[in-house]
Image (cartoon, rainbow, N blue to C red; front, side):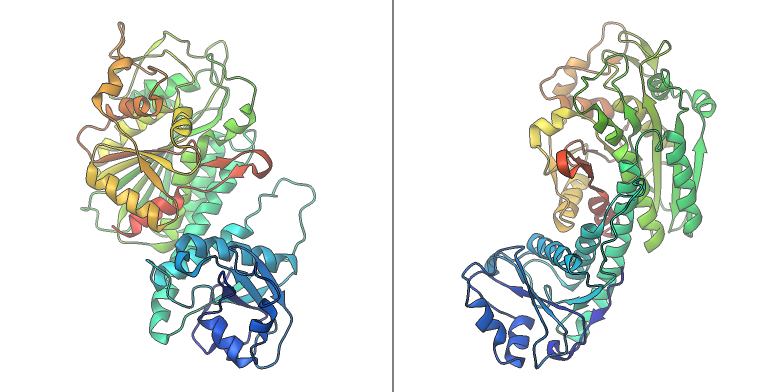
Length: 493
């Protein structure tokens, strides 16, 4: 989708449809007021017919009117003017794309961010517009025998009120397009069924992505390579599976080789039955989404490849299935991790931390600047904070603060949760260094405490995305989060 930045007078802009904001109280401001003045106050007269105009997300399509160059006008409710912020802008853009898609328009110009918006500049206005528009158009229908033939908008102009703001708006568009592309890659991988999206499929897709971009390479380790490295924790998870495990290493080199890299680790359980500790049948179909952390890392690496920022980033994806079988790991088995710490398996459904702990140990060989792991790790995190925030755990307050701010800016929020040593008490084992599962209470913090034992003193953050990586019921599907959070964080380094 194209997003040309427009700088001309609103009344003179030739476009199939001018998207104009209207606020509660039937208030026309900025470009809406200018166009209204140019067409004899026709908009003001139209909106007097109802007091409901202006509610966030409400739309009204108006045929061509004299005095302006636009062929049509779409009025989009933006809520209270005093409350119009980045989140409201994103919702208004999504509503406008839905309305334009219904009538089959391919091109339009948005004036929703024409005037000032509290707390965001031209860069973020343009970036969030591009992200919201492309997210609203996303559909996963690659496996359907019959797909929708609905016309999609392919060109959305973004209007700014001064030529001096165009450069920052174009930068925002560029970043928004790259972030959306990474999100769509993450969503496609996550939405594919587990008989297609296997560990080998993730590896192949990662290799194909690397071929597309400069400074991006992919290497894939097989199970025999993991055995040589001593990745006993990871390999214990895949023992019951026919599909071979893969360890994917994506390297983006945008800076000097002397500059320490950032390492991202993504949990890649392409299907999670729970293993011998079998999950209940209800919603087990959604366990194909247990690789959303891996998809996030792969999508983020693709976004980096597109934007080419001056940093070094390593993406690590331990990928396997967690299946029951005659060779599957059993509760009470003891395995040795790559760090040489021994782990008693109490619950084979606490498998994500087992593949991640070996990935985090592997990450240390890069002597990284910092490490971030991303995982659909615990149902306990969903119980604690629901489906709004990513759960954030960290051993470094500065890193945690930077990630929280990135979440706010990108509309992909996180919430910091505790990781105190006391949460590790229930991981005590009489037979190994510690167990892989502890008390039910505080389960998300206990899982994070487990992972913290494999990072040493390196600044590290754990993102538990179990509540935000996908949606259920009639809207079932991957969200692409937290690609925006991670990209905002990386770009602001």
